[in-house]
Amino acid sequence: MVTVLPVEHPGLGNSSYLLDLGDGRAAVIDPQRDIRPYRTIAHRRGLRIGYAVETHVHADFVTGSRELAAQGAEIVAVGTAGLGFGHRGLGDGDRLDVGGLTLEMVATPGHTPHHASWLLRDGDVPAGVFTGGALIVGGVARTDLVSPDRTEALARVAYRSVRERLLTLPEELPVWPTHGPGSFCSAPASGQRTSTIGAERDGNPLLAGADEDEFVRRLLSGLGSYPDYFRWLPDYNRAGPVVFAGARPGLPALDPALFRRRLDAGARVVDVRPVVDFAAAHVPGSISHELRPQFASYLGWTVDPAVPLLFVTNPDTDLDDLVSQCLNVGYERLAGHLSGGVARWRDAGLPVGRIDLVSADVLDRATVLDVRQAVEFAAGHVPGALHLELGGLADGAGSVPADRPVVTMCAHGQRSMTGASLLARHRGGTAGIGVFTGSTDDWATRTGHRPAAGL
Image (cartoon, rainbow, N blue to C red; front, side, top):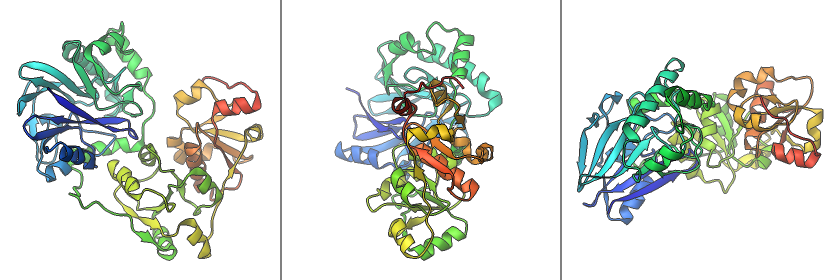
């Protein structure tokens, strides 16, 4: 019996898969950089990880294939993908015999030009297919990550990959995608992580009753924005990420004086504490990014990876999670965290900033800056609100009127506070900036007003 063990990465909205090959070895499909979950599963099952198999060059996370290779695995990938490190390159129809199982490469370009799905066979019997982004639950992965002028052409290729290569497989065949709920690679966002060929043939909204032109129209109309780091991470993955081989960088504790010197030398401060803590007191000029499962995506949307990063934490902050999330999206210049936190910074006589958390009834006396994505804003927003997506705020802060108070808002408060901190950096202080931590629905409930819809 074939054993496939999903390893979910909910923060980035992805899954990778550990495949028990039945001979004491395992293969990992689309591993992320932190390989500890795969090693833990393999150890518990008495397996050695023999293969790291890639469906495509990833834009949303740093591949863990080289980390697994440092532990003895062989990397298997598409031969035409141009990888700059050692691997076994296969082409369409080539097979990798692994114990009593076989992985057959099925060329399925679209999400990327050199995308492959891997058809798992038990003997000659198809047992499932790892589809990466070629077919996801309720959609396919976006085709606009290579360049704007190739988006439509890749969408047409994606249609043929699905129709001619994947939907011709047996309808009961399990589908194991890499991209899933919460992934910015998903287009549209899907709700489940796995499916079957039959379920997608019958129920995938992008495919239902669609010829190629209609498929392309539906796909392209569902593409929202995506984090800035997607633009450079594929090149990093293609060249070959730094291998830590078990010696991952730590996050040293820095006293206020050393922290201040590194800040003055050009480092950027990221405050990972909860919104209420940042509001009460923070290092002036710092960017609020509360540590949560989505932390890495929004860090990669708003912070330059070339700049050393300093962190402000609480005593209970999970530093291992913080480091892992940074490394998983290619942020490696981790300079340290503030020893003793903001309290010690203040005790050293250094300045602190604060931002007001405001109630719903204040919003009609301020410029409401909604930092959610366009699709969220269109579904319902405070009437008259200014819309500027969080990812565009650093460049667009100058368009926010400065002649009246500004209140940022999103759905839960984390993006609101990030937006407020970015606006404060642009303006050189927090005066006149407030944060509403509720949603549009919360505002409507508390005020009795109706949200507006549309852009």
